[in-house]
Amino acid sequence: MTSAATTYPTLLNAALGGKRSALQSVLLAIAGTALLWASAKVQIPFFPVPMTMQTFVVLFLGFALGSRLGAATVLLYLAEGALGLPVFAGTPEKGLGLAYIAGPTGGFLAGFVVAAYVTGWFAERGFDRRLVTAAIAALAGLIAIYALGVAWLGALIGWDKPVLEFGLCPFLPAEALKLALLAAILPLAWRGVSGR
Image (cartoon, rainbow, N blue to C red):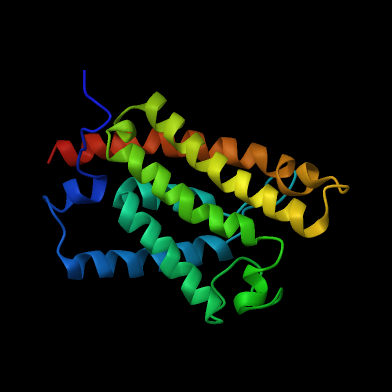
């Protein structure tokens, strides 16, 4: 049995053959922000609301990059948005910069940072190598996103409004699908990396 303190290489560390250089870490973070930007802009028809792959990418970045680089990558993405780059879903139509971040989705964006850290922490303890444990780790990341997102939304619009109907319930079917997809892909990716 392993202890909670035992850490393992992340998926990308294993794929790169060990430790990353500082340059590799910077390039991975920049690539991660580009992936987040793309995932925010592409909408997939889904019921009851269209789906983006943004939460999938946030969780994947945590699993693949680890807790610190995963969270740092999401922070870099938020910095890009804060500076006015149209990297978020609905931008520039729904605003740009800090005004967008302070709006209804601000809590979800903050939750992205926590989720990347949480899933990275679980990955560093080997949770991304098996379907069930990967699903548990991904669920913990999603809980972080939605806990902060719904709390912020409720504080912003008022708890007298149907906050859960606005900020949680419509997204649950899509999140369940993304969680299952991620939990299935990660062990397969590890088999591919281990088989090289």
